[in-house]
Image (cartoon, rainbow, N blue to C red; front, side):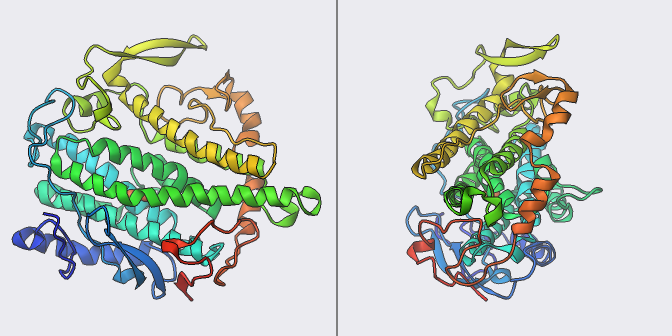
Amino acid sequence: MSTVLTDEKIPNNVHLSSDRRLQRALEAWQPQFLDWWKEMGPVGFQQKDVYLRTAVSVEANGWAHFDYVKMPDYRWGIFLEPKQEGRVIGFGDYAGQPVWDEVPGELRQMLRRLIVTQGDTEPASVEQQRALGATAPSLYDLRNLFQVNVEEGRHLWAMVYLLHTYFGRDGREEAEELLARRSGDRDRPRILGAFNEPTTHWLSFFMFTMFTDRDGKYQLASLAESGFDPLARSCRFMLTEEAHHMFVGETGVQRVIKRACELMKSGGGDVRAQGGIDLPTIQKYLNLWYTLSLDLFGGEISSNAADAFASGLKGRYKEDRYEEHKVLDQSYPMDVVEGGQVVRKSVAMRTALNEVLRSEYTRDCQRGVDRWNKTLADEGVDFQMKLPSSRFHRHIGIYADHAFTPAGELISKDEWASRRDEWLPSQADEAYVVSLMQPVYEPGKMASWIAPPAKGINALPNEFEYVRM
Ligand SMILES: [Fe+2]
Ligand SMILES: [Fe+2]
């Protein structure tokens, strides 16, 4: 099953050529995907040689091939992890029963919604990031942007394969819709909020790949537990690629912080006067993108989450670590707002599973923030980055109708409005950051506001011509 046929029109390890109907359907979708890529993918650079990694197998060693490629020629393929014989459903009401290779009729709608929602995020982020090439701070960063973009394109392929293969006509229609919605469009927006927010500059891009791609990691990890085996196997391989996206985000922000520290110690210490991004501004963008990403996990108390778990479609993060997989009688402590105060309540665990996953996510984000704080300490700068409270600046869930400070204190909406610009990027902050965005396309050179990376891609030096201009 893991043999990959890379010389076919659509590279795949799913024996696509043995199912003519499916192959024809996907080969008919392929030019529509390419049209979308050319219309909504990266602006410019489509005819440039970019040093990209392409997935060519699902083997842990040697799954990636690095070479120059023009983006429209990228070999987007369909890769599922090999089937594990005898795999059983790991959680929910069907725990212990054999996994499904076909969609159980009664779960069809819920499963389709999960796949479409995940699938929609992939082209959305490409659309959000499409203009960034014009202001890349270095060729190294430009290449990383395009790497993330082509892989999000491949993730779309992974979900479209499932829709075409298992959902008949409905699935084919959904696959077309995935190319028809547009990030930020008033009439046909992408499904989830954060995927309609503009990513207007590179600081937002790095925050996005740090925080929003990390939401992707946790959604994929919980779908990788799915009792619907083709979904589980797709998501496992997608996680392999996702790791690089978060690396781009975490190290990107780390380099902006490092540069700010260097400028604080030179030229009188005014970071902005020297063309850097000051630490308080970085903190505001952290607050923005972290909280937008928290919303992606859904409501704190959610019957949808309970249903997806009960039916064996969406598990917990690393379900194996838990001893008990039905969670029928457990409860979860939840801070809710009642009578103008925050009080702790106990809610049924199955309805709290979005919050359980969000907490895992927060811990993972904190580990990244700790590494940023290590950079600050190493630079001898007395400043710490902080994740705001998960109640701050929320638009979904039980805190959405209330106002909280970043420390999590309940305040009036008037106070929130008057203090907003202390906590989130103001128009002036945004204008300042945008004003810094000037392209640097000379190999090895960096923009004024970012430090060079610790090392290059695929053991190549920083001076390597990652995009041939
Ligand atoms: Fe993705
Ligand atoms: Fe990603």
